[in-house]
Structures are given as structure tokens and as C-alpha cells.
Image (tube, each protein chain N blue to C red):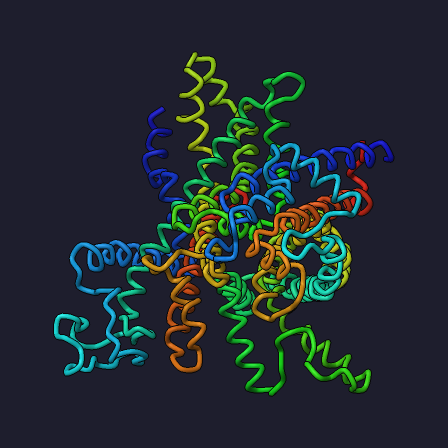
Length: 320
Length: 320
């Protein structure tokens, strides 16, 4: 008896799930790069909320007509612009646009708006996806008249998949009054189908597993079985698709901005800075290239991190 | 077999019916009506608005409007709100313009992503694999119109050729060969740009599919038999890895149609996406709804064909 205990003691302590996940993720250099960029971006976005709205250090909306179309790193013309309108340290890091607004300040403000569009849209789509997928996976056999819940929800998912998504988003956004919240909601409401399918598949297999049957045998209430035992186990694919969903929401917003239906002027987003900049591509290329590459880097970081998560969370890939 | 096909077609017709009902209600319930496109026009009298509403049946209940739409669509009498032209010929003509773009983009996607994906899977972890992985992520992370603008600038500056539109204006009298080359040249860049996202996604998918198959027992058996490496990969592994791609056919189509809105707008291509965009701007409900309907029909037909093909290529699947 004792010897067995000693052998067990000599073994390295068992890895927790998180340690195992972290060990695999650490090896993926691209994913770590993505994670670092995202960390920086989140800090930046929160900092920008402070510095552009509550304590105005970088003012995105000051118009300085003498200073329009200045290239990046140029100094402001001190004699023409009133001193309270000077940018920090007197230089425009990213140059100025056609109204002499500081592009750096606008990009800062846009980082928060763009990210919140991504996160809220994905929050909505994940919420709907988990709800419908869970409903159809757990209560799928319940009949409503002649049709089961599962058939009903999955048919509806098929219906939604038939729409050309971008065209649908564009139609609805164009018909609704222009508002940043409408854009978030519309992107969210049109992109939940993948999540719903994942969650349904996970729930169908989890429902048959021993720990769920045990929980049922213990007489736990259904909401507890679903939310405490099943949802956490079904989260891995949802997390991955959510990470990639944020990336595609940011891209969709920039596409809408390009067509003129994006977030309207008082808010600056990277998408509308980019699509405003396309008119000045020869005269002021920085107005086009800075937001373009910013979107590229951030969306890339989301995609790489999401893909790293997929590898690290997927036990099937791990064995290879 | 035939019962399977009939039942499947019936199911799809029901789905299509629901799609059309959903699309119709979404578009009619959203605020913003054809009669309000030009509210600031001083010559627009309230009685004119009354007339417009009566002529378009906008005062009738929703289900009656739906029946009117369906009746007109199938009798071919559907008229555009904007210019009172019959909708179907209008869409058909634009569809013919879009068709070369769709075909060309699909060809580019499928012919580029397979070699890249297979090559990357065979050399897993090599420099080639890592470069293509990173490139694929970069390509799906870049806003489409940003990349297109850079591409247009580069092509026009380097090769000194026009790329906007379907053909060069004033070439009508030129030799047939010249006109053909001109058409082809105008086709290449837009279709390449709309194919970019597809290439990135599909080549990654090919790679993971190949990796999945290469680890299987029958591939090991083929190697153990002493077959040449080419024979193992291209005859035994690839044939099996190809199976799931049959189903991808149906899902790439709506993405291409949705994405065409942006690309046709950039390249001034008079196609379906652009017609949709113009219709959205003009609140031209019959055109919007019919384009949506046709996209859904194409998607459903695509998935039906791929289901059938799947059964043809994979004898393990029996249609019941």
C-alpha cells in the first residue's frame, strides 16, 4: 500500500486543465503574438476612453484649419493655431486630416468604438447561439404539436444561413435610422448560426455523458444541470468562434463604412477613418494607410489568437 | 434515391418559403419607405405620397403585400419601384454580368487553395507551412476594399492599364482579339480580389483535412505496401481528403454574392451586387427582395447538388 502511495508522490503533480492549455498555447508563437497585441489594444482602448472623453488630453474633434493635411510627426504651426488647441508635445504623431483634426487622437477614440462594436456584436450572437443551440440540444425531443423543438430551431438556422449575410446586414442597416447600436445589433443578430450549431452538437454529446446523467440522478434542477454542468463544457468551440467573430465584426463594420452605412460622424471608428481616407489616397496617404494597417494588425491578432485557442482547447488535435 | 431527392426538394421549397417570408417582413417592418426617399423635394406633395403608396400597395396589410409580391414574381410582372422596369429581366442582365466574376473567382479559389493546402500539410511545420499559414491569416484580416485600392494603385502604376469597369470605353471598333484581351484584363483583378478571402479559408481547410487523412491507417498501409510517396498522397490520401469539399460548394456561393456588393462597387462592375446596393439606396423593395430570393434559391440548389454529389463520391453514405 505504502509503496504505491510513494510512487504517486514521486510523480509530478497532475496538470490542471488550465496549465495544460497554457503549455500548448505557449508553444504557438503566432498566438502569443496575437495575445500580446490584443492585451496592448485593450489597455489602449480603455486608456483612450479616459484620455479622449473624460480627461481630454488627445482631442479628436478639435478643428485646426491652418494645420490640415500635415504628414505624420510634423509639428503644429504654433503661430496660427491657438495655444489651447495644440496637440500634446506640439506634434501630430499620425498627421492631420482634411479638417486639421489629429489623426492619432481619432485613432485612439476609434479603437474603443471599433472594439466595442466587435465585442457587443459577438456578445449578442454568442448569447443567441448558446440559447438556441442549448435549447435544441437539451430539449430537442420535446414536441410542439407535430414538430419537435430541435427540427424547428435547426430549420430556422438553415433559413438564416440562406441569406447572403453582408447583403442582409447592409439592407437592414440602410433601412434603419443610422446609429452605432443598430449596427452592433444587426451584426450580432445575423451571425449566431455557427455558434448555435456548435452548441447543439456539444449538448447532444454531453447529454449522454456520465456526469450529466449523475447530476440528473442526484435530482439537481434542470437550470443547474444546464448552466453549471453543460454550458462550461460546451464553451471551448464557442470561445474560439467568438474570438474570430470579433475580428469579422470589425471587418464588417469597415465594409459598411466603405459603402457609407457605417458608424456616423460624432463617433470615429477605424472603419470610417479608413473610408474617409480613401478620398485622399494621393494627397495624404497616411489617412488611408494608418487605419488600414491598424485594422489589419488587430484583426490578424484576433484571428491568430483564436486559432491558437482552437489548437489548445481541442483535445483531438492535441494528441497528434 | 428518388424519394430522397423529392423529399429534399420539398424541404428546400419550404425553407425557401420561410426565407421569403422573413425577408419580406424584415424589409417591410423596418422604418424607411420608398415614398420617403426624397422627403426634402419641394415638388413632392402629400397627395403624391398618397399616390405612390397606393400604387405600390404599401397601405395594404403585410400578408396581402406578400401575396402581391409572390404573384408578380412568378408571373414575371414584378416592376421596380424606382423606374417601373420589369425586375426579372433587369436582374437577369446584371446576373449575366456578375456570372464571369463568380465563375472566375470560384476557379481561382479552387485551383490555388488545393496545391497550397496539400503542400503545406505535407511539410507540416516547415518554413513553407508557416509562411502560408501566416499569409492566409493576413489575407482574411485585411479589409477587402483596402487591399483592392492598394492593388489598383499598384497595377495601374506598374502595368499602366485601366482596371475599372467591365471594358475600356471606346474599344468597340477594335479587333475581336483586342476586345477579348481587354475584357479578360478587366476581369482578372476584381475576381482575384473577391477570391482572396475564399483562398485563405479553403487552403487552411485543405491543410487540416489532409493532416487528418494522412494519420489514418489506410495511408500507413499504402506506405507499408511500398507504394511511391506520390502515389500514396495523391491517390490514397487526397481522394479521401477531397470528400468534405463537395459540401463547401454550396456555402461559398452566398459569401461570394454578399461580398460582391463591395467589390463590384470598387471596380464599378455593373453586376448583381451593385444592383442590390443601388436598390437599397432607392428603397426599391421588389429588387432587394428578389435578389435576396434568388441568392437563397442559388444557395439551396448549391447545397442540394453538393448533398447529392457527396452520396455519389462517398459510397458509405446511403440516401434514404
